[in-house]
Amino acid sequence: MNIQIFGRAKCFDTRKAERYFKERKIPFQSVDLARKGLSSGELCSVAAAVGGLDALIDPKSRHPDAALLPYLLEEAKFEKLLENPVLLRTPIVRNGRQATVGYCPDTWAEWK
Image (tube, rainbow, N blue to C red; front, side):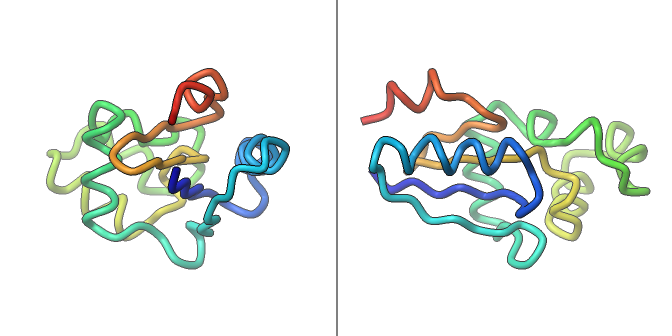
């Protein structure tokens, strides 16, 4: 397994995801979205795995652009999410081409 956890340092669910993999002694790479963000290729891959960009958008985000996202075209949403990774729901957990958004231990247990 090649686990990557994209999240924010202060996100409770991101810390829970990291703890889940630590407890099971599964190595993972942690990426702070606030500092590094996602590349366009990573965002495409994750969006394809979770069912589209709308599944990645954090409905609780307080960012000013969050209210605009539902009204934008897919290309514009993609650009906004690349510009402002704080608009993404966390944690985003990747295992190769598989990915989840949010805390999903049942799905992670099935990964091989």
